[in-house]
Length: 366
Image (cartoon, rainbow, N blue to C red):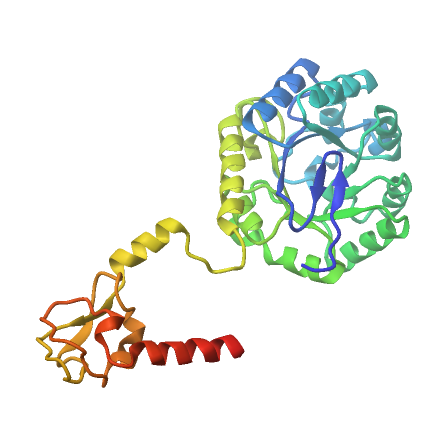
């Protein structure tokens, strides 16, 4: 992952070599109720999320009120999409209250704008970055306006093909805005075979950008796998209860699942570790007990040669001459009488130390 620069999102660096950050996507699950939105925000904090994200909708600026795009907005949307967005509206004061609460808890506050008017509102709020929803990946005029603010951009790509993603990246990069790309499949919920985590690899290779996953699968498996594959950011829809009304509740995770996501991601990061193969102190103890040493399997008289499977072989424990040294011992003479069932010592083998020192000196000079 050389050549990929981290993107600064408030207190967080997003990119290789940094902890993956977890976004609790409240979205519109609050149904326009500020108090419910605040409760969800606090629950996300308690569960361990790093970022809490909402959606900023201004219905009349997004769509025509005399149309009903719900029919083409996915089977998870029932009723008028326009009415849903009107009901989910949060005004400037609501946004300011949510941002202040998030910051007081150490959460990064983000929101997804769906029109240039929403971008203007979020500029008044003072957001540090923008999350762009998948539906806007082909909306180049909108991306041009948003990226022109110069703030970092997190771009979901669920409704764009590869060529469309490339065009959107070109527009955003044209303004010099720092960018994070998220693989996403806009199915609610998403089936495992539709997640396509390897797209993250292609994005990383093609654009040299931090990548992540916006996930709509049931449960946390896809997010765990994404982090293991190098995702720098993972996002899940979040709600207090999937029984609440709303179009995204059924594809959201609840507080206990978010807590499991946080714990699982941190455990995976710890387990990934480094690239060196080393044994810690506990593993060395285990190896001593479960590996083999060179031992006598029959009595050996002084001056007699050691022979594999005649008078020497390898058995546990591993506290003597290591089993991989068997060939070095074989053929040499015993310096003293030895009983069967004895861990051999270098001092009991003629010329063993000399051969060992020659091997070590060669290794040193190599």
